[in-house]
Length: 82
Length: 188
Length: 286
Image (cartoon, rainbow over all chains, first blue to last red; front, side, top):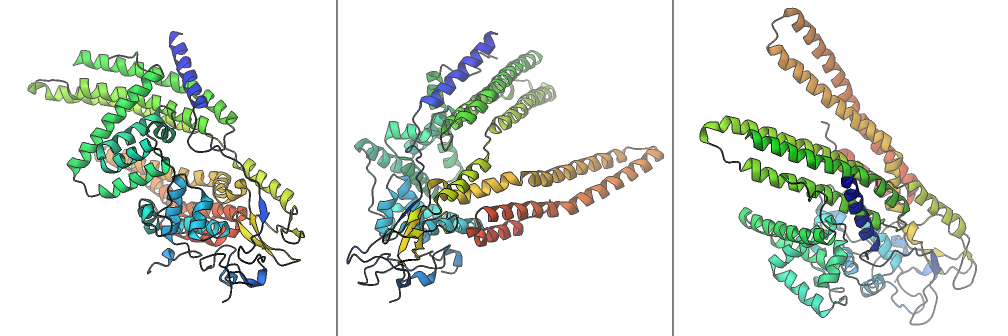
């Protein structure tokens, strides 16, 4: 009987400890889906489909400083043509 | 590059990907990092998913090994090396000590392990008591692993014993805080 | 020695009682915490589980320490070496039994971590139905239809003004790839079990054959010899049959698992297939 009380008491303490402590990192926040678009910070133009994704079609401003390869949805064809 | 699995994905090299992971673990925001790399989320999300997939595909573990190496040397990255998370003065001092003093590194590793075994979040415990983030802890661990890879058996044994001893000391401390261990009253 | 052995056995008995009682009592507590922990990573539950496993380990450590001090380092006279080895062996075996019991409880405790991935997946599917026609082009305001579930941020073109909009999936949908694997594994766990059972059974047959072959060495009775030889042959046939099945079961499990994963996240099918090829290439039959 005494034994069981001891076990129960220890388990309670462990549970309290688990519940009361702060865990590492920020609390998980579920971010909803979003849709937005980027306009050229240089000339204000929008990004249009045929013009490719890496540079602004109007003033040549660099949106992305890399070359796209064949990925999941993004493909080589999405690079802006020089 | 002889291994095609090491080719960059959308211009994101394995070094880029590893260092982004390390910097994020140190507490720097994703937006700041991607900005410094000159890429957008869409590019990074794909590169990240595909680097993970390449690791799964790679039976030689070359990618995973290189990932670890780059992760351990984030400050060598040309574009991201200078991005630093805010660290307290005390944290900075402990960080330096952990990098240079192997006994201190072994002690913190033992303490962290003991914390987990007593139901305490070891990463948070290290942050609270020594001001070192999880990311920095992992980075230094990797640095020590590569520095000590060629240690003799005696030296490894010496530091393992030291770590075990420290783990035991911290375990006793954590046990006392929770009012003892389950079998304290069982005696030979 | 006799007295030490009795005391050691009694000591381990007491540790065993403690271990059983504590582990048994912790299981319902952990199950409850697992069910009620709403944290995405179930960190409260994990901490408590670590602490419980840590306590079991503290019992084992105590056993090992006492064993080393009282048994391994037991002082004995040169002429009682044989008796000492016997004594030591029996004591070691007693602790070993405790270790086995501990392993069983550790597994039971690990198994309190149950997560129904179907629920998480269902949430992603439901979310998609709600959001697929909810977004408008940030340039011209026209509807931008989300044509499928995207698990990575991507660019979607407005069909009216051709602007590239950036679509960023929700946090839960971004986790689809990893969740997909866990769910696929959950859905096909019975096939993995089938493969593991076959391996276990052929191992048992091997041991049985081995045992019979050994017993033949001392068998004088001709009838018994014939009978045993026949039995060995039967068992060998059974074993061979099982061993032929094993690679098929193995492949069947992985193929079905990857098919499920592909269904859940078809965008990554090409990558999954490369992973599958690697797994099959690395398979070595027992």
